[in-house]
Length: 261
Image (cartoon, rainbow, N blue to C red):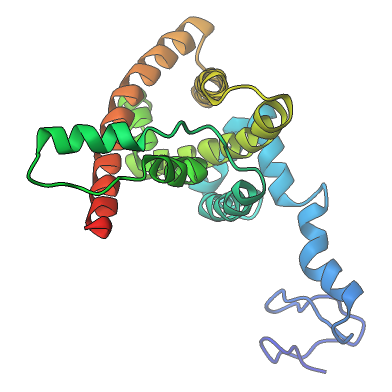
């Protein structure tokens, strides 16, 4: 018989093609076969998703260096890691929405009309605007990965890694933090009822601690060096983040206003 992928000759009892490595499938598709082929590996504890997730806590240096050194089968690829998280996050926020927004649409619209009386703008739905942002908050955070990469590149600029390597590092770090955030939100906000502001402050410390910890392991820093780097990282990123968030909010707000006119 021949391999259906590369047409090379294979033996009947072979499970994989010796030429291209493809798995040899003899059975027709069934519920059991579909589970084993597509769903089962994801929930298996020994697949590279779980290995990537947990090794970012226990052995982050190995995870971060594996991809850039060419060992790209050992762990989940960084950008696939992001896509998986973003997909899960979109569905997650449909089932666990953040009901945190105070409706100050009238005050916002009145202030706009006061500053420009001739405009007579209709009521701006500020609640809907803020909920649109917050519902995809974690997804939007992932769009800031280039900003994270720029921040770590500047802080750890003497370590020899370029921007694209820092892009890989932060893809792993921020995606893992995203998964952590989903779990923490369910427990603290949706179940216990913690305010979003308190949750945000708590997660900010988790974010800084985890990021600092990973780079400490990556660059073999001492505790003192790690703390100083963490403080500088937080301050620099805060400046960049506020700038990007304000610009994005203004653009998003303008688009929403245009749709109302």
